[in-house]
Length: 630
Image (cartoon, rainbow, N blue to C red; front, side, top):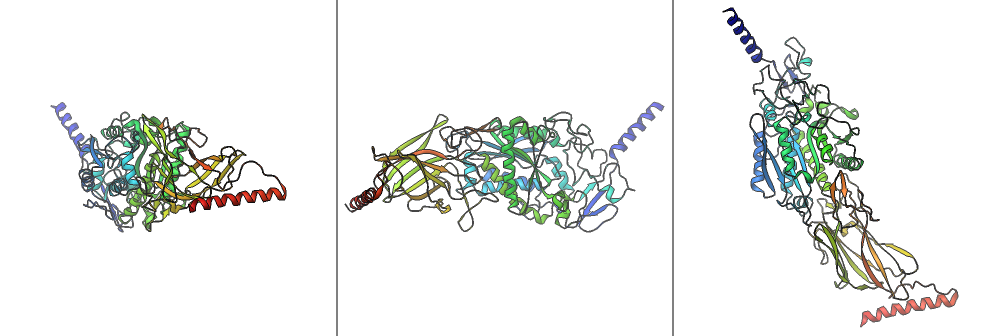
């Protein structure tokens, strides 16, 4: 009897411990009290709206919008890649034309973007959803977005930690107090490290959805510490009640397993970029495995992202890790195992860097603890748009460098005198020259060149401009070079940014995407030396053009550029050396006659020699006039 009574007492104590109530605290706009904390602006609450609003959408609204995109647009495909601990389906969405090949017939590269891994970071699902929406809205733009959809496969998980995200939205203004505090603690102490409700970070195994339950509020796994690389390396990574508890083993959680399944949709061996989307700090945390080429490309890419956002008024600066060191984050995992550019994008507000106010104080708030996770509703529309511009640039860059697809020259009457194009077959390309007539000095010609991707962007007035924050030469760079028998020569042709084609101009237009081609006029210079034996010279057309992200051309289109072991493959410079920089493409040779050109042999000096040279030039000019008059 005594034993039974003691057992019943033990059970009662256990039940009392597990069902004890935690103190519920509230964020407010202006009111402070023992269980209230003012953040200085209205505390956002979820809004039911499929369309983007000046605020944060509820999970159900976001999910309905994602599904609507997949149902109504052939370019979007929805896949269930796993379930949460509470058996909610985790969705990944693929953006592309549905095949596995580029327009040029090569295997498509793939990108993976993850959102909502930490429940309380509401900025993340909104920013990722905006990218999804812009990929659909621009599908017929005849420019960058259409190019991405037709030549790449972008896999996006908008919300990975669904259970946790829903918990934060059930209690948008409420949290539980810091572990170790009690009713007698000060408000500052209670709000220092809230762990459930609006400030839940981890997922929810063995966690109920009642905020006041004391026994389970510290449970869960930090999904961004559940990766295989550096697993267990951080202090407290193995402590179950820690904010950064990594779980019992790497990828132990159904959510991180779902991320691995999403990577397979790329497919995995085609991945060239990964982003895990977080808040807050307004930085890029950039892993650095021991691969110098991969790191150089990634760091340059991070600089371009920073420039793209800085041009819009926000500075997302890269924080470069030490080589070989990191944490068990998803970005570290893909960086080290797949050797691709990766980073953790931390969305604003800034965390007090560069003398900026910290957290919510950045927007004029009180700077209350954790207010950085509570972005004002009035700011998210701007943030979404800024980050979409930067993210699209990253995808465009990692789609690969451009190559020349066609070169054509016509005379003033429109007659084709030179035509060459690259033809794909069996994983390589060959240059097919269908016309190669002799050009004449002193005559004007049209030069038309097309590329494999849109090369420029335009402003609302239709003028060619830099992509946000980038700095490339907007005009094509072209020169003629050769050897006419008396030494090498080179002549730079005059070009303008207006040479790019977004509509038909004098019978010329873009190839597939607006501004994937240019047309300019030129005259074969009359001072280029020629051989006195043949009366002609052969000249190379040298094309040195950067795309809108600053990547130079693949100088040898015959070998197809790809990605392997952390760097570009078959990406040649102007000297034929493979690397990561590219260079001018000089594969196109034209012939010019000596009509009106200077002979390469030296003329005699003195008055007589001068008279003979002038007479020869005059007779050549008369011959040109006579020919045109016939």
